[in-house]
Length: 248
Image (cartoon, rainbow, N blue to C red; front, top):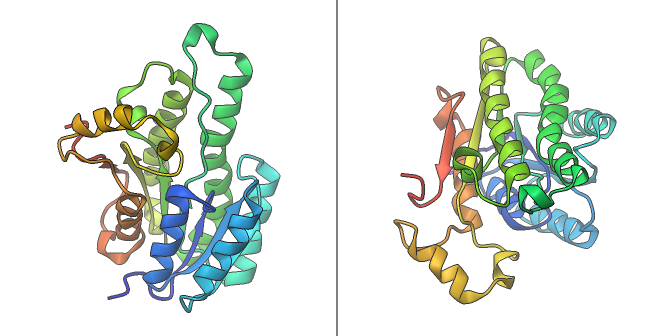
């Protein structure tokens, strides 16, 4: 059963990791997929071909969602190319970890710009076409760190906590127009980045999780499919933890 048949989706930061998994899973469920990439040009072009091979319309855009003007142009381009925008997934994000006393102003500002402001930029631009069509699903990627904090990640945790407040506020503002706004809070998800870490350390993290394993990008992608589909038509303003019970 294809849960997203005929829907048009935009996913930011989709050239690798969780974003890539979301794009592939959306295509498998019948969605036409627009996605952004920035530095990973080769991976972005490869993903475009992979998605098209699944029989859906797919197009990659080299765009920086943290830039207000670029985000506005991106949404306009996607609506022009695809006709409508039914699902927006704000997945683009970075980390610049350090203890507070060693954290520079630049490290704070850069995280807020990329992680938090990008959500404001894309949602503000996407709200117009979604209001016009009286429907849409906004999915913002937060983190369990935004719910519980983490030493050495004050900037990242603050940006992800900000996304939660933003998501809930948008749900209240746009609900009357049929637009839903939810967030997903991944826990320890095993990607290319975690593959470079010490195996003993990673196993220690797995052992501390009630389900005794790290998450797979598909675990997050499946939650996105649910929130993007009509199965979640009465769910808005929520944060879904995809963390194996980590914060239970």
